[in-house]
Length: 148
Image (cartoon, rainbow, N blue to C red):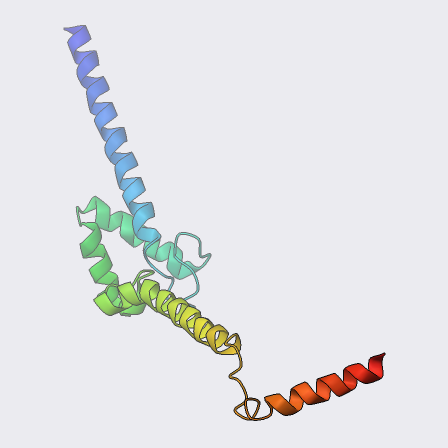
């Protein structure tokens, strides 16, 4: 009986500690997803401000109340707007962060290739050289005479 009671207490303690660790991890994850609305420069997990501390406390309370991550994020979006999210939620903003730099890089490579192609093309022959071939040969023989 005593062993059964000890085992039950151990199981309850393990469950409580694991759920506490899970909520702490979830809280840290949420804190990394929100930008401090005081100056919009850093996420609240690293930003040293009163509002960041207040938001951390609110997140802990929301998690204790059983709210999900999405519900908490929607609360802050409703309160501060989309700008509060470290990673934007709208489809264009989500993908533009990755696609625009890639598109700019591709465009730059294309421009460089076109530039290099045009600068390394062999020069087209002068249309007047064909007519003057006989004069060039005559001039070369005369110049060769002077080299002797």
